[in-house]
Length: 549
Image (cartoon, rainbow, N blue to C red; front, top):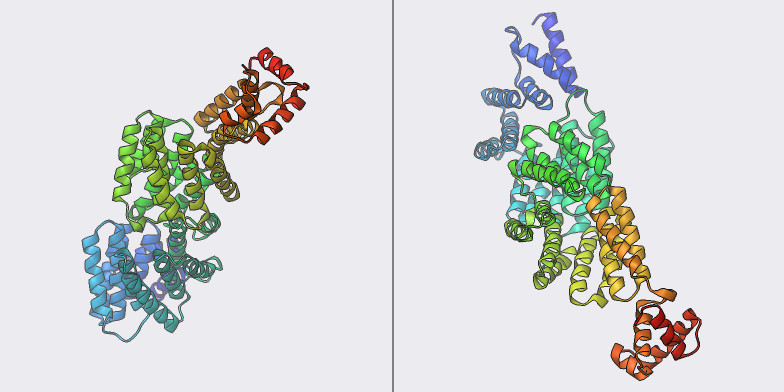
């Protein structure tokens, strides 16, 4: 080879080593087109990597096919096995599962008979994911154990971090939440510290963000989403294929945090940035944008966003059902939720099902199906465990059902749910819970507390731009002001005064209100003090004068 050729080869390999993928792609692509510069199998693998990072997915597959053939021709089973696994990964992302399965089988053919080697970690990863998908927890953990042993043997930080993430996913799928999240934290520390290569860092961020949201670990989702976006901004000079996927996860977090303007803008950017092999992330972003638009009363825009998500293969529930409810189509909302609940399986994670159950409770109550609402709320309560986000959803649903069945039992449940929403810093759901709590307070006769909750809810909705909800809270607040009782009387005290003015004795009042005579006497003392009177006749006159009778 001449000196200029050697220099170009060295520059290309240096760019690959620095993960300067745009530069590497240009150099390797130019070398590949030059008749005097035959690329080695490793160079072809690097060209495939560089094309993938640069968004040239077809070129990436074509170069990987050539790399595989070159490794086979050279008798390099390890190189051929790794190239075959990568082809399985790329074809799966492109929506060609049969071809992907064929390449995974070929990767096993190359690698299974070899002594332990790092490339076999990828086969163990595939085994773990397949076992988790079919619900075989022991097999999944056995596969991640093999993956970890191979990673430790190879001393590869990349493979070791990935094996911990895979083990975390297997543990979470079995409900072993504390163990799974501890392993995930350990894997993510390696990514955040910059100890991993770009592709493994991107994988870990995308997988971790998915796990956090599916497991309803909102605190971790907020933290790792921020870190992921910082890495996406800093890594590489050109396109970063992971940016759109991480941004789609950020949209979900911003939506819950009530940062709706930013969420909608990030959703638009995510849909532009998501590569064609990750369109499910774009679908999730469309759903989140639709949720924002629906709650702001922009129903036509929300319908279009949900339609885009549906076009990309995602059932846009429960957002679409809640849109139908807002449009007055409660039967369509209920039917959509029934279908979504029937189609969903455990792979979607507890948060997805919890959201469907919460919406099912709301829609069932709206159509008067209290028994159905109670069943949905009960399933949600069983699902929630001690996970704060799920517990808050379950508490709000249970409180709403209690309002329909036994209003006196609703307030304590709703207050616990509100406390969780406030601690999670999720403002929209907190305001919704305040609306329910106001109804519970009013049913208990505490008009002052009800007015306070309505005022806080109205302010919260207005701050978010949730116009329809804000107008509803304002209307209820106005009605409450019109119902305000004279003399600072509570609703219960007004009931006692009406009965006394009608001639009832303390015993008669106690029987009518199902309270003790001692309680009646206490209420009368409070009434006399508030009205500045000292006799029953004076209190009766006050009641008639102020329209209480």
